Amino acid sequence: MPARVAAPSPWAAFVQRFLAASESTRMVIADPQALYSGAALDSRGIAPGDNPRLGSTRFDDWFARSGVKK
Image 1 (cartoon, one colour):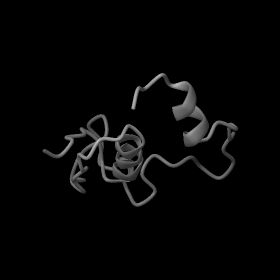
Image 2 (cartoon, rainbow, N blue to C red; image 1 turned 180 degrees about the vertical axis):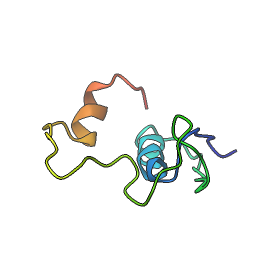
Image 3 (cartoon, rainbow, N blue to C red; image 1 turned 60 degrees about the horizontal axis):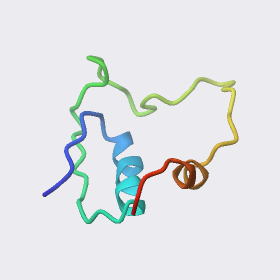
Image 4 (cartoon, one colour; image 1 turned 90 degrees about the vertical axis):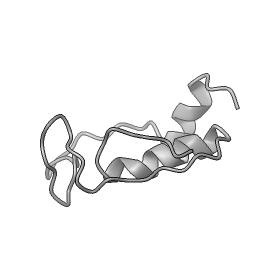
């Protein structure tokens, strides 16, 4: 059974990575027409503008501390 995610396509890869790290065999099916909080997104998705303030947390670090059980 696929995982249903109420988010536009750019989130699909992140959610799929989370499921894989959680040892879930479910797959994500992205909906390119999905809205994000009611808004249609362009090709940048929710990417920041020209001068973003970037943090140092990476997915692998976050997942290791998340408490998600495999």
